[in-house]
Length: 247
Image (cartoon, rainbow, N blue to C red; front, side, top):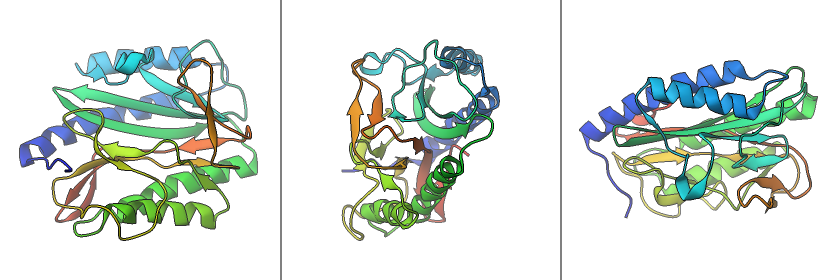
């Protein structure tokens, strides 16, 4: 059963989401050639500490970073380290926070300098795919309507959606039910109700949808080595329509 959040829960999640959104903007501004992913991670730690929140990923099942920093062919769960960004790279920044027991999760993909034309289109399509999914996050729609909207939009533009990793419920913990795939047929799954809160997160590959996990046990990369992009928002289902909490 999908948890239903109270009005007080939603009020606190909105505060948590606002903090996360502001931090993400600061992290986005830090992306430039020559910066290491470890330096971005350290900035995230500093900003989360300043807000008296907690980084939700650090230590989660042993993950070592405050953020996931995934470069080019890395899909998700890139571990921050000494690798420095260079012109033409793209980097997915994924951050979850816990503010007074209320969890929010968000991700963006940012280009470094001038990008190849196919890569900037990949980023634009992935960002729009998230908006397409959010549009379907409405009371009385079915869960798979979100998935179907994302997949059809992405494939219409010649890219593929990742199958191995999915969106999820969120709120009182980082991962709650249900799982939200970025693919599927429409009008299936649970009926969406006022008070549900989801982390919707299309992961889109330029080539094949298939991924592999690196020897570090965390980082997923595309099987064909082509680039991947990732965007995510935490979204509340309300009687007035979808409310993005992390914008």
